Amino acid sequence: FILLFAKVQFFSDNKVKSLDFWFLNCPPCRKDHISIKEDKEKWDAKGVQLISISIDSYEDKDRWNTYLAEHGYNWVNYL
Image (cartoon, rainbow, N blue to C red):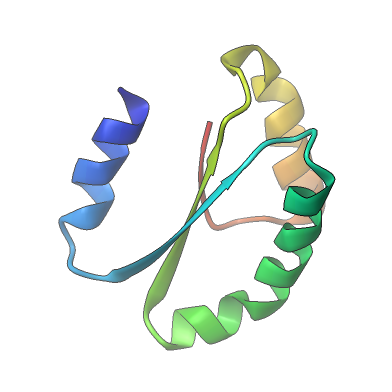
């Protein structure tokens, strides 16, 4: 249901999107976030919007929010 709502909300503006699916206990996913953060300004300049969608459970929301805040991952993220 959350993803369906996200689709309606974010795909109605006709911007190019890059979807990133990940979870907290995935070392390659966490490594990718470092590269994404480094390249985010380039993507923004080209009009590409990054949307990260975590497949973690809702019970992990506090850990998930802490991870995003500690690393400065300020693009659109869904849990």
